[in-house]
Structure formats: structure tokens, C-alpha cells
Length: 87
Image (cartoon, rainbow, N blue to C red):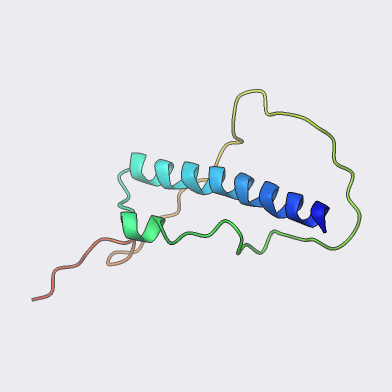
């Protein structure tokens, strides 16, 4: 059970770093991200997690920080977290 706790903590740390980098990248490109929305992001609920099977884990560190994030898709008008004025 101790190993499971270690895995959960490692996944939470990894995902938190990338979620933070993604929010920073969106804001740097002028895409508004509300603080209240960013505060509700969870580092644990992601489909890329697979805790079944065997894994070989080698210790390594990225040469220059985090891996590059993907391209930002176009956001349709009226979406993307911008408060719309109600008339």
C-alpha cells in the first residue's frame, strides 16, 4: 500500500506541474482562464492514467524542464471562460 501512495503522489505532482504550465500558456496567448476555474482543476482525474500492469521505471530528468505542451486549439466564439454580458 505504501507504493500505491507513492505512485498517487508522483502522478499528482506531475499532473499539477503540467496543468499549471498549460494554464500559464493559455494566459500567455491571451486566452482568458478564470482563477475560479483554474482552482477547480484536479491532477487526478485523467484518462491517461493506467495503474494496471508492470512497469520499468528508470530515473531521469528532462534536460530543460517540462516537455513541450501541445498546440492550443481555436476556441469557438462564446466559449473559453470569458464572462458574457447579459442584456
